[in-house]
Amino acid sequence: MFDRLRKMWRKKTAERPEERQPVAPRPEKRGHNLFEAAAAYVSACAEDDQDQIDEAAAWVSPEALSFGVNELACRAVIALARERDESPRTVARTLLGLPAT
Image 1 (cartoon, one colour):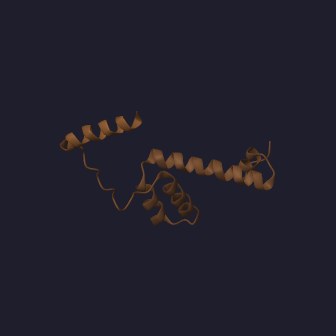
Image 2 (tube, helix red, strand yellow):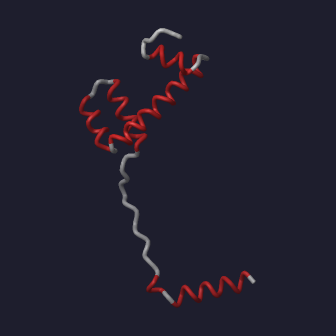
Image 3 (cartoon, one colour):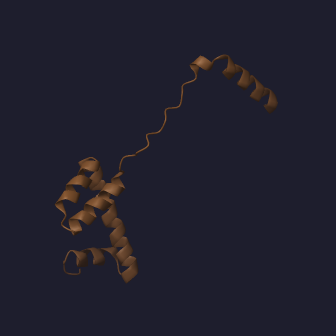
C-alpha cells in the first residue's frame, strides 16, 4: 500500500516540475543573535570599551538587546547563587551593594 502511494506521489510531482520552487541558498555570513549581542555588550560595559558597546548595540534592536541583557543577568545571578550556595536574591543584592534583607 505504501509502495503504491509513494509511486503515485512520485508520478504526480514528476508531472509538475515547473511548480517546484527552487531552494534559496543560505547566506554565507549570518547575523548576530541577541545573546551574542548581549554578551558582547555586557563584557564591553565591564571593560568600559565604548567602541565595542556601540558596535554590539547596533547588532540587534534595543528591545532585543534589553531582553538579552536581562537573560544574561538572570543566568549570571543563578550561577553565582549556586556556586555560593546562597539565594539569587542575596547574590543580586550583594552584587549591587545593597544590604541583605
